[in-house]
Length: 246
Image (tube, rainbow, N blue to C red; front, side):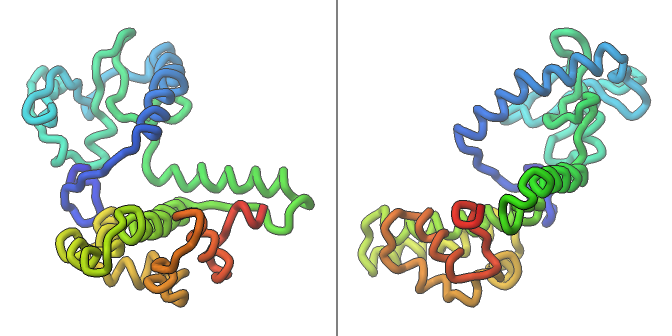
């Protein structure tokens, strides 16, 4: 991720699973393509004073963009220097004309801005409330912050489980491994782009702080990370378990 779009203004490397990439490409070839076609038919991609057309790429992994402005001038910009506002006005020449370089698009084919995800989660929660009213005690609800927290909790459990069990390390070997690579808390801190490990412990993982997570996750629990997450949910009123509650 470019430094201009991260919380700490530091460039970050984000790893995406193969399944997630397949889902993104499915979106690009279906829903996104349909939105682009509709926008092109309505003339929404005419270049104006703020837009720029990416005509070439260079540098390592093509991270330097060659952008043609409306006055014909071509400028070079490294992707790490582009903020959210600048990124939303970048276009490329597609099969049927101009289309945004921005990946996630709204139904009108224009860039879907970060704050708009709040409305998406809110609408989904409202649909659950309507359709599940009277059928479950508490219909599920979700927010972007809960998604971030769920990611942090899952990664903490999965990484701790891998470090302690999957590698078959002895106590001394685990100690040496953590000295070299850091423990699960430190790894999750880096994934969340926190300034310190203490931030990870005291804020985003607060719902499980009273469970003495370190000792809990080092217990032998059959079923791997999923079983550990279920155990945490059973012992904390602040953690929801979809399998148990719905």
